[in-house]
Length: 407
Image (cartoon, rainbow, N blue to C red):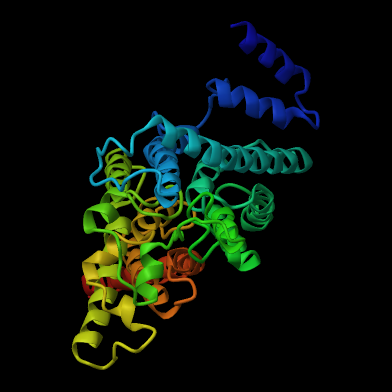
């Protein structure tokens, strides 16, 4: 109670002054807001912005913890110090050594993401005189999960500043942005620092240093941190089983490898009515349809196995859901309530186009065979247009019914 009283005293002391948003944000983060409405008619519900954001974070925590173990596992596996694990409960995966390496690599990403992002939020709140909102709580957790484990921290910090300022604050802050801030950060990293966001060395901690040692003449085995998508894009044999791809025993971004945990997160978000099942379902359907089209092109013989597109075109359509980040994007990115379509019919269209375009970009962009973040950002821009035409269509139908009724 002492801390709460002290914060409340500071809050009252600086009320109406420039630093008031900073104290208000700290007080609201730790405790329930003191402010209540007294006039007018209001919907009484237990959910608010902070509870909604905390629900999404809870759904992301298993992916974060698993990503830490996987970071250590991929590191030691590439060094040849452990045998490959098979199955989600393999004893060689859930070890303290793997967790320590993962903590050492992933925790700084989380700290930089939250530290830099919230600092920008506080600065804008103080300058513009509005309250610090909880919108970055989810973005701050998403960013470390969608980047390679070895990305330099200063690059991440620069990208976070860009994403928060350009992707959100210039539009007016939380609830006003048209682009998903986390994906804006990912897009900035990809286009500004492409060598740190693609290739077969960025996904496994220590890969670059070990290859440098090999180049210097040290007697070490060669190392590869190639992702499944990278192998398919180059028409190489994939060294991972379907079970490995589903459980997440593969290289990749920190939080997107375990499809099992992503599915659990999706069920949790749908059950709590935070995530839209319409968007998730339609995104997966769109991806499957595009995969079926490409499979049909290959089966018809319209493209030969010498084509640079053959590798990913020939992937069985359903397998697109367990490789890459399409499932993670559908559950945690496409369902962003601010940047997604708001109408029920619009959500189906919006999600379908995300899945459809994701697989199209994945296949036709061999240099970086993953198109989920580009597809979602593109549809973020068109979401208001989709809703506009859905609403206009409903208005026309009602006008027709009115004419028939009056006739």
